[in-house]
Image (cartoon, rainbow, N blue to C red; front, side, top):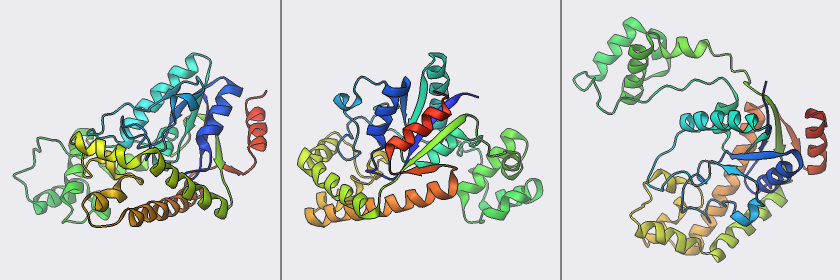
Length: 295
């Protein structure tokens, strides 16, 4: 199995810096596992690593989309797996760095994703009840988690049934949810007080570095707060400021609060969803990585 080093943890825990440190020490290239840093022009609010900070280490999946484009976990999975293969063929170590848990789990495990409903929906003439009746006859298991009023999921289930000749539940049951790689998963952690202090400092620094000007530039280029790119923490909170509904201080406080809540959710998600060890001491983490690599 291909070896893949994975560095996860809450925002502001030092993942980017440690990823570079590991890339230098273990001849690696970094694959970003962040869902906002993929967008060009969203630099400050996403805490995007700069060219200088990269220290000549190759980084992938940063600045690959325009701010008006969409991105999905399925696309990340496909791109990420291709990059793991590409980096490994160069006899380098793929290093996944990020805090978007679902993206990283989808990349590492045997998850199968289903296409959303077709753009030219072939079921426009069917009511929800009609689709429900078809599924009830041909794929009743799918209806255990789909309400008759949720048209999007009904259509999706019917598309999967027509395309794969079997139902979502049947396909999902055959997935083993096993790792596809020899993955060493490192979780970086800090005590809560230190982490929250880092978050506060980071947000204040974003404002000093010109976050408001960055957002204004995006708005001037016809990007708006309904775009997927602007849904990330550090951007969405300023909608009410630009609409004149809240003060700047109120929006900054919202960014800090939302970031802290997000960090808490990240801890919970990684603890429950992935088999990893947590480290406050990065030297200990590096020693364990060396043992894993048989160095």
